[in-house]
Length: 116
Image: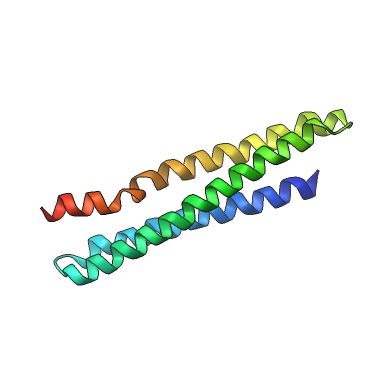
């Protein structure tokens, strides 16, 4: 059980780290100010980081789904009861990370609106 949860927790943590990196990268757009070239560069980096983060979240959620299916087939009732709770905590963390990521995925649109 510990190994099952640990692997999934590592993927969830990595996804959260990617979201935080994306947020940090997006702040560079604001810091660029009137420097259009620097802002474009920061925008491209933000978009690339957002895609990496989005894929990491999808992968972690898929892993959670697979682990939940595995847990349901186990004979140990304590594991069948505790593992889903722990996996759902990880799923909730990923939902929060995804909510942080959603506006960052729209960085290009927001940038164009500000530039107009």
